[in-house]
Length: 325
Image (cartoon, rainbow, N blue to C red; front, side, top):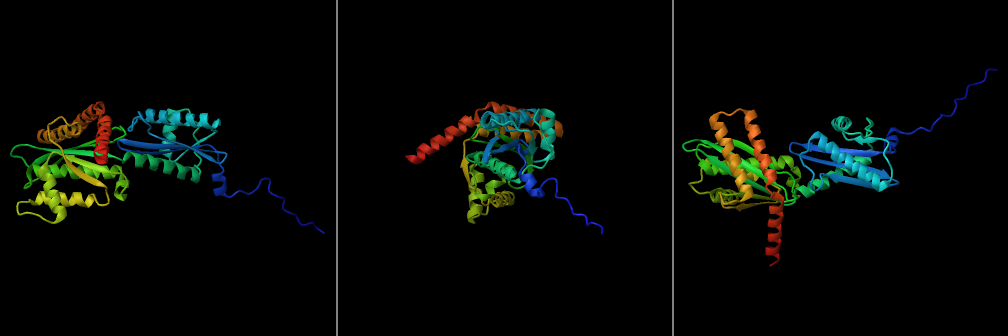
């Protein structure tokens, strides 16, 4: 009689794929990179305890080069190693681009294996916490410039962070047939607000706060009339249309508007004015896009030299004292 073969027990225990992924040990790196703004988090799980470092930290560039970003992350991994006393055998990344960047610019042991979901979730929450810090005390300064007898308005804006992060700048043009410079001022507010919300969509959820500065009382007055439904016969269609776009974009945002005296040494207003004039003149003279971008980049470098972070912290301190009184 022929013996029936009996299957041998497996050489190793069967481990479901999800369990295998969750059991992987190492460091997880997540990078959220946008134009002019980069946030990241490094996570490690050692003996059931989470170790997380996120950035950019104080004094670190918020718009780093690839080499600078790799250096920030390498330093964060080193700090985790010093805390845990455990050198990671592999470093997971949230995406392929981050893996390639770190392979090229660092000596970290990057792996192509998928990062553990729990580690990614913890890193995302850390990045979200960085975001919540960034959007606390935002100030957006806007200005416009209009040539004589022209329909083109130059629009400039500067978004400044209270924690000293690099400001975000923009320079555009708009066309106003009826609204004149007032419509241009409102267009600058609208473009600056849309850019701010593009960088920080969490503002629409009521997280953080945004103050908009303008040197145009006329723009703020028509914006108030549109918001309260008290339009006057002299309110032109261009300005009213811009106000409606602003109010629509600002839904859900903790936003306030403030008038500042123009050409009075206000650091943010001066930068916004330079950008508005630049945008208008470059369009009038037909300057090509590459040259225009280089000129804006030059103003961006000048903005870094202005101590906007110190100015903003001073403004918030003064506000807190006035509120307490």
